[in-house]
Amino acid sequence: MDNLNDFIAGMPKAELHVHIEGTLEPDLKFQLAKRNNLDLPYQSEEEMRAAYDFDDLPSFLKIYYEGMGVLITEQDFYDLTWKYLEKAHSQNVLYAEIFFDPQAHTSRGISFETAITGIHRALTDGAEKLGIKTNLIMCFLRDMSADSAIEALEQSLPYREWILGVGLDSDERNNPPIKFKDVFARAREESYRLTMHCDVDQENSTTHIWQTLNDIGVDRIDHGVNCLEDEALCSEIIKRSLALTVCPISNGYVTDGLKADEIRMMLEKGIRVTVNSDDPAYFPGYMTENLIATQQAAKLSKEQVIQLAVNAFEGSWLSQPEKNGLRQKLEDYIKG
Image (cartoon, rainbow, N blue to C red; front, side, top):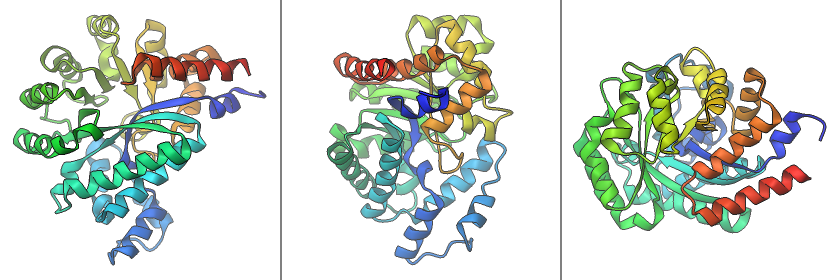
């Protein structure tokens, strides 16, 4: 293999942090708007991309939620999900744990059933037609109330077998993990796996990460880069074997950089850090682009790139035999 970029492109991968609504590319957005007789405030895909001018989390979220307005029918959610699966498959993603935001749809009159049925149907087809295994994680919106999150949790229960875990996303400012302690306790009673976003460079970042550990008892942390500011926090994360799902290209848009050096530091410390795409339609880059960007910026060795892939398999919520199967495919690939 000529170079590391080619190796990364062909490498078997798992993705643990991708928001399905964040994979809504401009071309599909125009198609769905036309299908649903909606007018978009843009004349072209180029004009739409030019409007993706965000420099922090709130400015991104505004565009992100506006974009969801074209998702109305079950088929819309199917097409959205299928497009992502095709792209992931083309980049040798063998397994993905995918977020969706039901409150962002139910709050605008789209039923929980409509959204999840379309998504689930595409995931089923992805397994059958593309051979890509997936699981679904339902995220609560942290800038909505805990009562609203409980309502979403109740709505999820008829579809319990379709959903592996719950997460927490959206605007973190003044919305700490502790706000949702009771919701997550209830979710654990329903045997959901638990994760939470601890976004990068937020106010009280390390305090929030400690809350996910001590008050919530998460099984994983999304983003979480600021743990490096607290040695005791790093030690606790290592002790619990928790994975961190870091999203470098996304970081480059909403913070002061990719945080690639921080990813290298986590690898060196033995933290189970992973690289993911987050919202690749808005932060241009899927799994391969994120791994290449991280490798180049942090000057990672081939062995460190392989460790990122292993971390994703081991940090997933698959059974150990399934993890071992993915690791074997990676080992076979390395041997050539």
